[in-house]
Image (cartoon, rainbow, N blue to C red; front, side):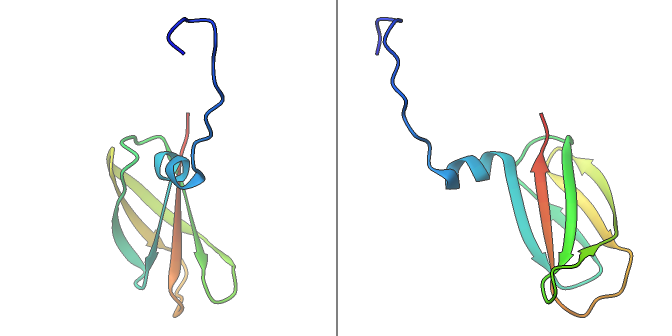
Length: 88
């Protein structure tokens, strides 16, 4: 309300929250340039093999607030899922 005393619990759809704090993409090569909308370098990056769910060791460089250069350190033939989570 506008009275400064009464507050309402308005649920925020999870799809909206996920877009504010997380981003994911599928890559099919061992290196990729990922552009995400999180607007910060304070992110955690994780890769996993979509065929068996195995976490993939990787290297990432935060090029800007919205771009990350990713390299999988092990050769995989299955598509790789990239998970990016905003921290803080």
